[in-house]
Length: 245
Image (tube, rainbow, N blue to C red; front, side):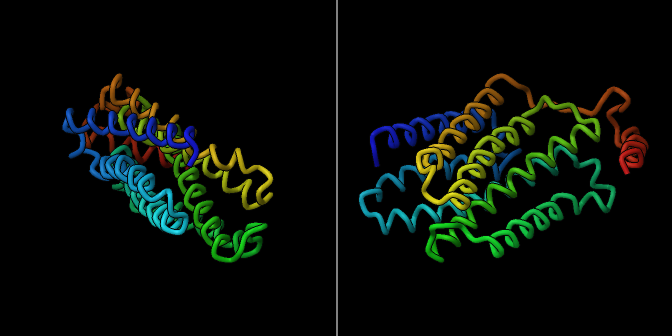
């Protein structure tokens, strides 16, 4: 790895450790266990990757195995936040299917697309890996859009830890989707952009998390027409969803 690549890794790892330390100090790891697990993994994994970077075959295996772990923890962290913010709406049976249904539909579309048009200039194993990476970032990007669109439509205010967490995931997801889409569509033509899009997107995401947990409170609420009780929210929930539907 080049020195600037190592520098990006170490900067990202240090900032991630800082965010994790703030969360642990404020005892928020009990409130967001999957997100804290993601941060912990994001501190350990880069160091493991650096330790094996001298052996290409080992690094390749470790890199993509840990990417799979990242993908799973990202989904769990996003679901954790989605359920926390929209918990009141889970009294509506159909709303319980919104998150999982979105994941299934988004994944199905991307899988179908990968079958019809596999990545160019890539041998089958590499093509499968690129398709998986594109799929993971595509799903995360769709969930990012779903979260903020749902908050807007359902009248949830946007100032909270939860919204900062989702916004932070949005940057690497969109950057990764751009990078892997370019690699799949154009081969090695945009290698530099593909190489640095994801790391820079992740750095932006970590900065969002850092600002969120340093500057914000964890309070979020609906608009003023809600009296703060479950009984008060229930009619409003049905009115809001009925209007949308």
